[in-house]
Image (tube, rainbow, N blue to C red; front, side, top):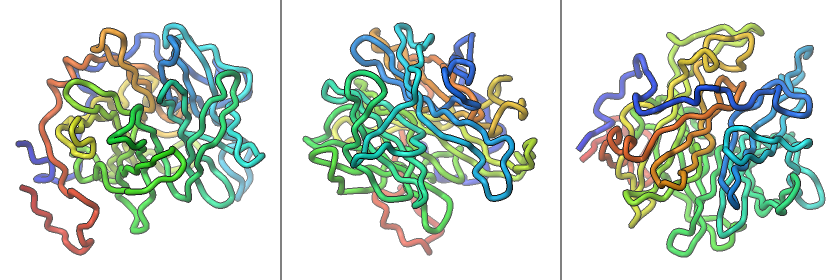
Length: 361
């Protein structure tokens, strides 16, 4: 069995998998496709619901004339759109409104869409003066209004709802910040009602991903297959050799890639396979190199995955450079050929932090 922890050296040159086919007319969404002021339209949650594709991209308006101490963005929203083909989206004239205790939540972003028990749900984080908080909201069925079911404590991102119950309980993924700094990992929590959450534990550690050194996070909601629960995730390696100075003076040296992991049908918390190499790496002209357009370099970020009616074709929706929304295709048949049986290094998040030389059976 492959041991992904044997060599923890920095990842070298990385390339997208041969099984990935990018949509020939990428990007499918940019600021030009949004009917209100925007600079970046990226990291879009996507779900197929009632025969149509729904999309919820992050929409940022850059503060180009910002003064010292001002935020980099004038506004951050989540857009909402619908499509018959999952490529040409009609974006609603207003961003999503998430209602919470009589207020509209500010700066809702990094959303995912999940179809669960015949309803469409939005999971997200939102920026506010008391740090970033995660949340889950249910769509009212028309327009751009969602009602918050639960709001969590800081600091968490990449909250994703599972599309079905596990042992009678709802399940979600989350990526809390680590008080010790990097790395960040993927966790799960369980709930009887989508409001109260507990039984939290580690789902996937950064150390479990050969091409991650800094953090990992959930990408799209799970897809149930005959071989297990499929998760598309993002992975980050941080290396000075990637250092780029952006036009506004920011220094960027992280590389965001996308991979896949498979979890057991019998015990969905058990990792059984992983891609030893990334599925997606920023390589195309609309993904890397164009620093006057991109907010970040070397970045692909998956937030949506849809399995088509043939139960084989897989669409992966991803952001590129924190600038645009794009689409790639593969098949489950091909995906199984690049996944390697694997077990997680730490069964639970209980390993003392001073133990550096971890052993793996």
